[in-house]
Image 1 (spheres, one colour):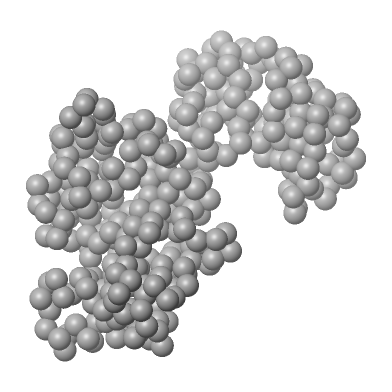
Image 2 (cartoon, rainbow, N blue to C red; image 1 turned 90 degrees about the vertical axis):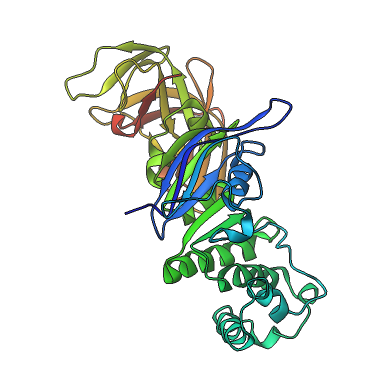
Amino acid sequence: MAHDLELIQVGKTYPDGTVAVSDFDLKVEKGEFVAFLGPSGCGKSTTLRMIAGFEDITNGQILIQGRDVSTIPPEKRPTSMIFQNYALFPHMTVRQNIAFGLDIKGMAKAEKDSKVDRILDMFDLTEFADRRADRLSGGQRQRIALARGLVVEPEILLLDEPLGALDANLRRIIQNELKLLQRELGITFVFVTHAQSEALGLSDRVVVMSNGIVEQISHPKELYRRPASPFVAEFIGSNTIIKGTPQPGDATGLAQLNTPLGVIRGHGPADADMAVIPAEAFRITPAGAPGELRFDGTVTNKSLIGSVGHIRVRLADQREIEVETHADTDAAQALVPGAPITLGVDPVSVTLIHS
């Protein structure tokens, strides 16, 4: 069975020689929610626009349900795209905005009205149907944009940072609604964002990009726990990164790295030369448990945010690291700047990668 979306060596190079996207490979299953994540200028929005047909590809193929759409114009592709600014027509009513795509398709009025009425009800917009779009709130305009994208019943919905203009509280509300909607409809979503929380919280898989290159494609949990490159390790979460020299593996099958802070064991290839330790993997301990890695240092700062304690620690080699722990533990509450601290880490939580 063909994938809902397949990118085969897709690339984009501008006339001045700038490479925006390089040899992008991706296979997306039907009903999957995939997020493109990365800093500004990494190529994620360009890739989305190539899928939609708004940007020509320089090389490669774009397949939707097995059909090559690489040279097909946007209006002929079975996709809908939602932009960060929603791109609504301010002079039109909510109903007219939602019906716009159906008008372009030349759909008969009775069928069009039925589809629009149904999706107005789905998005709780019926009472606003005859109001102008520019007179509604940001959250309502976002729902209108989603309704307009979905009413044409696309095979794939493309979303280019659609929540970026919302305030934090409304953004969280819409995030929850978006995931529930995607599950209910079973439509494939491809979502561009620079916000880690959105990518990790909403998607089935995350594509991390940097400088037009795909760094890693993983399930959110795997991406967070097992970064595959230095860029991902630095970009996702809050990790301590320690360079060293590969050593023979231990009896448990874990790889080993000789570092200025001692031998560090973890999951990874035998020739890895970099250890990645998540901030939440550190455990405040007076003695350390058997088999744990041990790090001694000095507390330089502490802040408590809700139930999470953020502790800065200076290790023996003078590097400062971030440690996350439960704020209400006795060990966390007793710490003050200048206090000595011993940290334990289960080697299972450590990932060894190539620099």
